[in-house]
Length: 123
Image 1 (cartoon, rainbow, N blue to C red):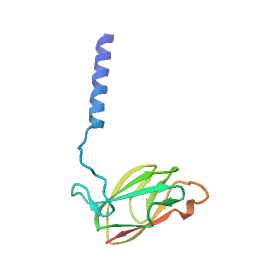
Image 2 (cartoon, rainbow, N blue to C red; image 1 turned 60 degrees about the vertical axis):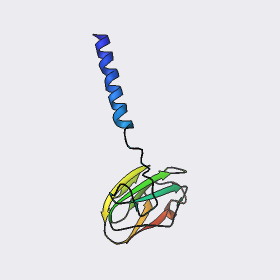
Image 3 (cartoon, rainbow, N blue to C red; image 1 turned 90 degrees about the horizontal axis):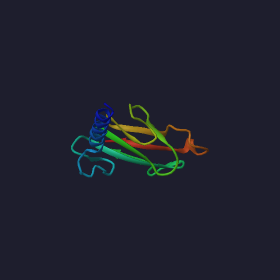
């Protein structure tokens, strides 16, 4: 009985690893405004202590995916006027109309937190 249970547990573990590790080998990292797999624009934002890597990011109107990576410190973002909110690192998508959207750090990250602001320009 124990061997059967151990075998089932091992098989489930292998299936979970295969599902999580699966994916294509395409390079989905792109500059702001480029499309990845034809699904819409991708905006990559890198956060470090009290600043984003750019003051402005640009994307075409429509489906926009924002990727956040923390280069230094612990940060999150909220894009005002949208459903895009990311805690720590990750991605979020929304369909955006043309306009300017303010990006703010959503995690209190220290004395320079209030200065962590950038703009997303949707054309």
